[in-house]
Amino acid sequence: MFIVAITRWGAGFDQQLAELARMLDMFPYDLRARVAGPLPVIVARIPERERAKALMDTLREWGHGVVGCDARTVPGAADMHQPREFSFEGEALHTEDHAHQRATSHLSEAYALVHAMVLADHQSTKEQTRKSFSAARAVLTGGMVMTRKSTTTTHSTTSESEERIYLFRRSGSRLGDPILFCQHQLRYTGLGAAMGHSSHESFAALTTQLRAWAPRAYYDDQLRQTRRKTTFEAATTASSKGTAVSSVTSSNASGVDLAAYLIVMAHSRGQL
Image (cartoon, rainbow, N blue to C red):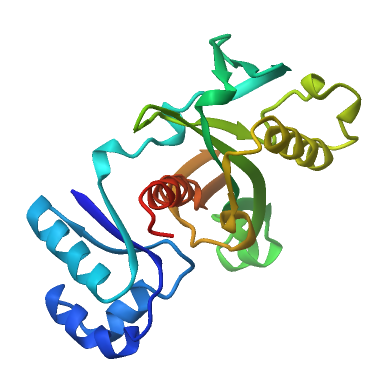
């Protein structure tokens, strides 16, 4: 599947909307809703490379910034090196993840730093069923039924956020999988005296240090400034002794992973 995304709006999209909807076999209203979010926006996912390229060519002719990629080449967070520990040593950045896998990045490889915010929502429903003695029921049934059941349902919603930085490295013309720094997974001892009193303060200090370490790397924080839509991620159910709990988790993590990749691709191809 090939992804086609707009990374910079040109002029006149309102006039182009009907034609683009016809090309994608969509209603204009549905297409407008699809592209209403923050950039980059996914215009289409197309099985054929040739059709995807033709769509990209048309959108660029209309003046928009556009990139496309094979969905199979987009790295997800699970494919990325996610440091737990880090240290700076001159032009080298040393990192170690939770599995004690180590990596060293050199300043010459640093191509881009994409600063993002990942959001997750957790919705839980708890149903608790209890049996209690009912004098009225005992009288009405002549003692055959002595209890009654009552069910209490409660709903709760919690939200979480986490800052992330994707460090994209380039070897020649090839972009490698990024290193992913996650706010709540890091130990910040590598910051020394710059370490803050909270993960928020420490992550801000890490951001400053990464930018100072790689001053020529492209820095983009639009994914931190804008909220991207969350999508379903997981659902669980559990029950025990009259209590049933179900929960649904939605997150924008995978969408942010894709958006970060598209932003860096667009920068490398002059499409921002």
